[in-house]
Image (cartoon, rainbow, N blue to C red; front, top):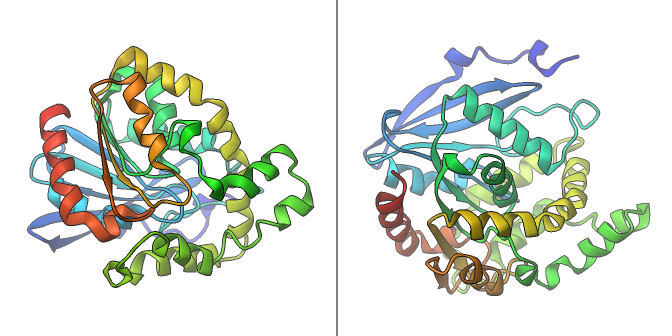
Length: 308
């Protein structure tokens, strides 16, 4: 049975509005193929667009403060990728969970929104989705902001060792060795690791994703995506060629204690984009959870200058 034939709310009735920090944020769903994508939008659609793509284990919720900070100057869209957040995704038997398919879904979503020019703000898994969009249509991308979204092998930390073994040999044994990766406890660890003052971390994000990953079939989907992450590493040379050739304005705001994506991955951009602005913060993988006050003004100034 198609996802769209199930008891899915009418899109127009699902859209809602709320006031937060003076910005009007709309919460919407849009059918894209067999996926019913949830997204948050704010700002005037006639203004320059900024598209925010989250990573693992997060959702568009991670951008909540960024959205409201940018809404006066931009049309801001933050989407939940398939298998994350509030997006309604089919089971793995009905949808192939690869980064190529995630990127295709997001590309179709942006086309349905009539967005043909936009800046990209990315984190973790959102990065290779964004790099695929940029490589396919480089003229559409006005600027890039990466918060611990990697594009270089130098950025892969020791946290990838078991995962690399799984890439090399996707046996049931190597998959089973990663059984703890898609669990609520592991997700919470990723939010806390490398953070000195964990009282600054809201429980909402990791609780939301912990609940999502506990749903039937979701852990298996995440292990499929983890296996397919090897396809992103294989395409790193293509992404780097895009950076060298097109020289997009790029800002990296990096949690320097991230166990998965090391500072060397951010510094590597300087080789391909000499004018890249690379900044480090004394925190972990989810830098915005603890350092939003420092990071968001930097992001906003950068986008006001470049995302036109």
